[in-house]
Image (cartoon, rainbow, N blue to C red; front, side, top):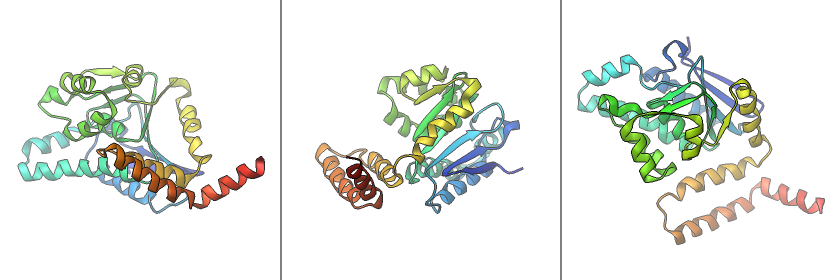
Length: 252
């Protein structure tokens, strides 16, 4: 059985984590397949967005037992390579040109919650559960923390990563960790409708906006404005912008 299922409808691609019997737990094979699929999206200029979801009852429960056993038995260099394997995936999601959206149902825990957090947008079913329980086994959600800290306030981030409790989709939205909560019964259709907005807006403008938003991390105010001016200039020269202006002027 393939670790992932890739399906494309119109200009939206869905990547489904396909280890339902293991609650879509992360292992080397699944991480590798997911990275390969994301790389492949960069070669398809027709795609507007990517949705990551889980097969079965859960989104992703984090590392599986074999992965944890491997961590326990590995030396420093082997553990470093293993950590960098996940690092590459988290960094890749931000570098992918188009929006990457996590559609979470069931549980998104530990590395699974980290995977969702790394996505540009997170939507969830009302019954979904989230959590970073790594501290309960002496582990640290260290790489995910770099993303979490950019999403939430310092004190809320501290509470989530040092207490390790589960929280609901409604709480996650209240924290600012996810964008939308949909009813369980209509979740699939609501996700489809929500993501379809990217078929109606300019692809080049979205690509430039994503790159600029993350590029501004760590910039001072003046540098951010200057970089924004450069991207603004580039956007004006795109075919989407020229056609958009032409349509707007014709409408008036």
